[in-house]
Image (cartoon, rainbow, N blue to C red; front, side, top):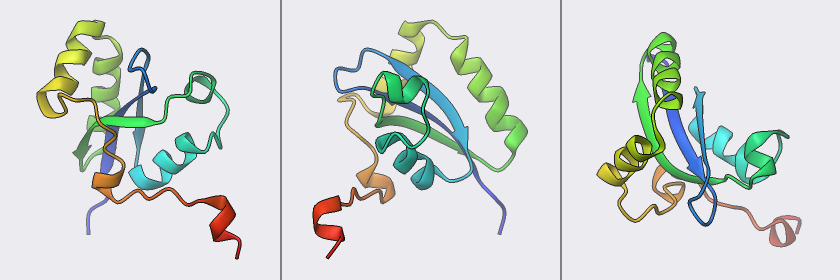
Length: 107
């Protein structure tokens, strides 16, 4: 089975700030963002809502696409997201991400 790589866009509750990243495990990376496991830009600005992602089989393609998207104007990014997710809903549940309630999971 061939490895897959993801280029993804996160935003905050008000959809005001974007984070663009690359990963080979979108569920794991989303968990890290949502739980602020890695300190940095996304944790600082509370960017934990997955609003867009693309998949490719080659890391070079994913890195090139990430670089391309980071250089885009904000309006272009907005239009890209709206083309597949016009309501800016969190796509986490659609890819199988389930938040675990820490109070009930410790039983």
